[in-house]
Length: 276
Image (tube, rainbow, N blue to C red; front, top):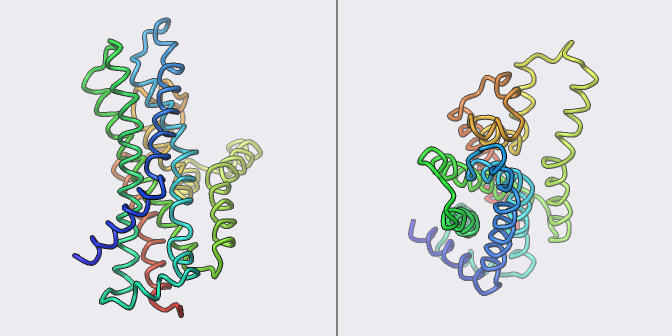
């Protein structure tokens, strides 16, 4: 455990030196503040609670931004160090390859969690400081949204590691990472929507639709935050889908955990057999 924590600390220190943490936190805070005060404008006319509107806006932002950030910080975690020759130096110390992988994962996840909590938290605290009425239920939903956003980041960090152990060049890893982001964030939902429109409810049942949505971690996150919470589903327009999909928050969280563990375990297995 000590070796894992040392490697995680090394990753965090390198990110601090490279200004990655500062850049991510500033970006998330700036976008969250913009969406908070632009997105909560309708509350004066429809009587909606301001923080529930913010949750919908930040959840939509998370689906596009967090997977991209997670892939950018993780896609060259292994192949990058191998190219620079620092991986051989690191493995010359009494540390296993599995400890290196897990230590890097914890370090990168800590960086992403810090940026998400501080960036999104700044928006919520600023909203509360303006005098907006926020009850305990909204605060709980906001905390759940931040926690699930970090879990979505863990999914794509693990996928980034899988890419990193499968290729031999950083440029190849970067190209595949962008392709994976486009597939899960843009292409998958467009294709699924096209299939549903063409099918017109003749062959695809609600069970089949549920299974298809579980194949995409961003859709699992969307169901958890935009369709699962009563207040958020009303503002996001996903209340109809929430009634169709028979998956509770516990099952959706388990799905995100599986999406994290499977690519991470596969990465560890491939990395343990890889020649450097």
